[in-house]
Image (cartoon, rainbow, N blue to C red; front, side, top):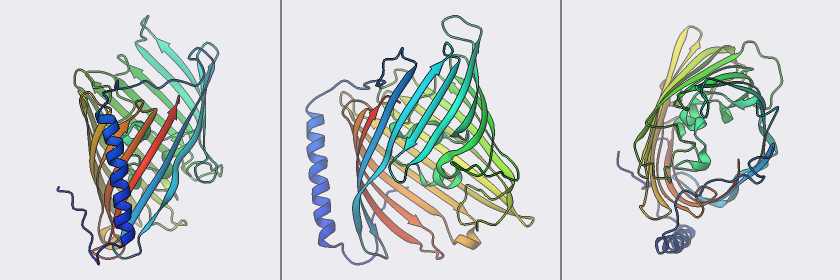
Length: 385
């Protein structure tokens, strides 16, 4: 689908023209510096504390400037922190017990991850035939691709509209999860039971939320992110599927329900991630069913995202299209997102700059909805983690 970033309404103000000029100047300057110097690709992430130490400390800071042009409201611009996190990880008892603490200070301080994991291996010498573990605490619910892949190494700084609409809010809950990995990490299985109330909640729930995910990777192990700045020499294709659901639940991925509504729901997803010689493609399909008084309300969505790293330069061009549709009688239409961008890698994913332009169409009770043009300039500093 061609990218159409034209908004209806009167011409943009002088502020938009000035903003565009400044953004173009920043983009041109950054591009010139990178294109004249071919720096090594794929600088590896390094922990703040030495690799042999039992505790490692990492951090991620993502300051963002963004401009929002609404089709039916005044333009807005400003700065914010997308992420400001400390990542404390460690291992004890000869590496058999691992833990993680991940607070986020970007908005109000909140805890993202806080878990303890017991690990074990079976068979093999240098590489175990099977690695398995049980993790308990607040953690990511196993379900979709963009929670499995770190957005620190994603094509875009934010997840797609479809991922945000059909996963849990924040993607995390408190519970227990078991996993197993085999064939040098090319087969992954995850399954867990959670409170079903979301992160940072300790109230008892009516019934658990169940979630699981399976991954098969052909040609190599799954990557930690969407981009292929390492320029993988041979094709690697990862195929994944996930499902989650709950009965008598007040918490659902799909927004717009009153908080006192108790329903049964389940969601599933299937996805693909390809990387080869600097080219990477990620795609997911989502479907959700909600039982409301015996009536099945169905939602569906997808995203397709692609990136290409310029040979010999720390520079990647990216594009994404996403769509989410559900409950047409209530919401009057889908949400869509179209986005393009370019990322400059100063030290791989440790230090990078993103320029991104997107158009979102949000359904708000009318067939036409509301169009929003979003321009973002984002820097990322990533240490360890």
